[in-house]
Length: 346
Image (cartoon, rainbow, N blue to C red):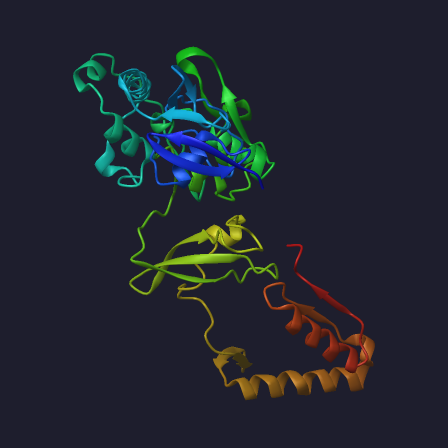
């Protein structure tokens, strides 16, 4: 691919043609504050925090493509003044309970505000007093409109990544906010609870209901179906407290469904079976694998002898590998039965 040479803050850069100024800067270790930009989404230039000076004109770097010989200044008096004003207008309406926020220390608004600075006295004069109710209707997602900065990342994610379109901009003026159809609670919307909007939200407006920080993570593969999505399990005290998608996985590229992202409570559940159970005298009792397999084989032979091979059937699992499912269907066919099904569509 053709390379384009440009200068960013007295640094000579060479990047592929079609790269935006923001991507060129961030890719070469030059920080440009931004809020509405996300590498998975099409650039919109909504927040205007990423403005830079190109030839005396202030332009959003996320929507400006590099050109040969371009000279970019990421700072300067005018750039800093405009950025500071934009950020102050954002935090005027933000309920800054940062220490109790689940996004504390990983909030992009915190990072940007610390970088550009803000006149706290001026902000306090125009501080909003309105408090919008928190949507706690959803079993996995907590939605707090008081912390929303209207960057639109959640809307674009639901549209461009998942194609669900469960949320969008609603109302006008000071009443504008991100809403579901009919302004209903998230649980009553067509949201599929994939959590893609949650992992991309730069602030604390969208958070998982179970937000315990992990102490370490383990890279593995999701067990819920045969797709083999790559995941990172967040663990704390030997228990799973969260799941994130593996962006390096060629299967899912970091994306997950509701089962893969939030369906992990069964792993440490006290009712989870850890050994085969055989019913004796009306009660289930622990047994060894040899006992359980021998019982199943003997029952298969008994039914086959009494009613014929067509009386046998097998229900396989979508959570095992293709190889396991192949062997399972071979087993049933060796017994003379073609009655085989699976639960992949559940």
